Structures are given as C-alpha cells and as structure tokens.
Image (cartoon, rainbow, N blue to C red; front, side):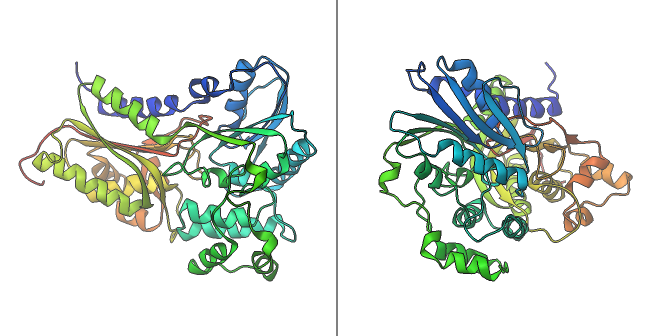
Length: 426
C-alpha cells in the first residue's frame, strides 16, 4: 500500500478530534442515577455538543442554559444554547453570565447542577466584577492575548476581574450539589486553569494578577487597580465550605487525543513519538520540533523513520506584525523555515476546536516543497513570519485546513511525518 502523507496527517488530526468529542466521552461519566431533575449550565467551545450528549443520556427532567462560541451551537430541545464571542468577550457573553447566575441562585440542598465546561469558557462566560466594565475586561484581554502571556497567567488575571470565575459559580450554587464535567484545553489539565475554574478553588491571588499585568507592561485603569487591591477581589480559596458539595470530573484531555493518534500511526505501520503537551513561543517550539525531525532524518535518533512526531499543548504568539494567523499557522511557518525543505518531512498543525486563533481555518499542512512552491508564488517565509502572517503564507499554497467548528477543544495538535533517512543534510 502506498502511503499518502497528507491524507495520513489529516486522518491523524480527525482521529485526535474524534477522541475528545463529547458524544464519545461524556455519557459514561454521568451519575448512575439519571432519573431526577437536573439544572444544566455550561460554557465553552464544546458546551453545545456536551448539552446534546446530556439530553441523550439523561432520563429525568432537564432544564438549563449553556453558552458557546458563535458558530459552535447545536440543536437541543431541553437546554437553551446561546452563542457569544471568543476570545474577546462581548455583551452576549455578559448577558448570559448574568442569566446563569440567576438560574443557580436560591437553590436548595436537594437540587443538582450539572456544569459543562470546556476551553473558551473564560471569555464566553464573562461577568465583570463590581466596578469593572465589560470594555475594561475587553481591553485587558486583548492586551494579554498580544503580550505572549501563557494561559495560566491570563486566567489568573481573568479570575480576579470576574464575578463568576475562580470558584464563584460554585459559591453561587451552594448548597446544591454541583457536578462539573470538563474537557481540558490546557497543558497539565489543571482544574483551576480550564476556563478559569468557575467551580473549583483558586490558589492564585489578586497580588499575582497585578504582578502579571505589570510584567507584560499592560496598562490598567485606576478602577481596575483599585479593585485588585480590594480584599473582595480575592477568589474562593481551597478549604472553603461552599466547595464541599462541588465535584469535578475531567472527561477528556489532550493526552487522550495524542494516544488515539499514536494508535492510528501504529496501524499505518509507522512508529509514533509523543512529546506531550508543550508551551512556549510558537516559532521557538517549531525550532525544537525541527531539530528533532532533522535528527531522526539524518541519524535515526531517538527513533528510526518512518515515524510521526506528535505533540499538543498551547503555544503563544507575541504579535509584532500585521499579518493573519493563529499560533498553529505561526508554528508551522516557523517549522517550514527551520526545516528548509528537508526531503521526506511533512507536517500538520491545527487547533482541535477547528479555529486557529480568530481565523476561519483549523490549521495548515506543510510539505517538503512548501518553500519552493511559495517562492514560485513570490511569497517569502521569512517575511511572512516576521509579519505574523502564517495564514497568508499557507493560503497562498492552498494548504490551509478548514474543518469548521468541531464542537470540542483539547487545544493544539501537531504531527510531523518523517519518511526516511538521509545521508547528509541537504
């Protein structure tokens, strides 16, 4: 059988997405007793698909409200689905956050709340803290996204500017029992980081939020600074009694998707090398991946080709140019330049939610002749990388991957196929 490199890489991406889809992972995690009444709330790019899975599996009375990104909705009959903006929150997200809080207020001990949480929930469930406007949060969020801050740092700030995150949603539900089912999109799968942890304790502090803003040179208005210096800005801390009836269950994580892709690699007769969840500047992470691919191609270390290098996680992009493209396009463009047309090496990088940053593509594909084809089109990889224009580079080659919203989210997926050994560096 002749191997089609591009088809294999796309198959691996589809496999990774399917392994994390709510229809595959949610039903088995629900309580054994599904006959009673439950109030369902949720936020994230997978929230609508998770709500669908709940409706199919729950035998008792259901009602509730979930919010997902524009275009990521799904048809539900008992649970209302609302769409809002991501990654920068909008009025719709603020309105639905207020409704969610109203829905879980004044509950009794006998009530059950099912909270469906996935990546993107932090901006989708946006309710500013007292004295802070939505425009304040939008401006700070935009600055953080451009600064190169990693997801944990961004969420520390978000939690302390919120009326709903950092355990505050669980506090609002008290004394009802809360079951949180989460799909992780963060390296390390920390419950406190996924969508800024609305139903779990938060160990970070307002002082740390201020320090992060200062470290990245983000200017904040005086009302925001005053709030972060106010003791009321502190989130719910470990050991708080209001969390005693709150249960957290991780139902999908990036590792599951990497394992599923690795199984598919073996089925194709190749060897997988899983690097795990990685963080860092996208173009720098690309250089490391390029070094590993080159070592395999030239020396058969740490494994012999044919093989596939797999990794996940969430890189960052410090925006300096005016081009288009998310972190996956940036990674792949950096990889393309670093490999410099190394024969027999193909790669894919994509976001499992189907949206790379704020663009309409999930990611892109690289082939050994990407640089050559780009040059023939008058497109320079170095110039496009300097302008943060990964989208434009791969669009010129017709190598963008467009899936549309996948309605799940375990963050980035990267696969580098190394087909053969070479006697010397070309």
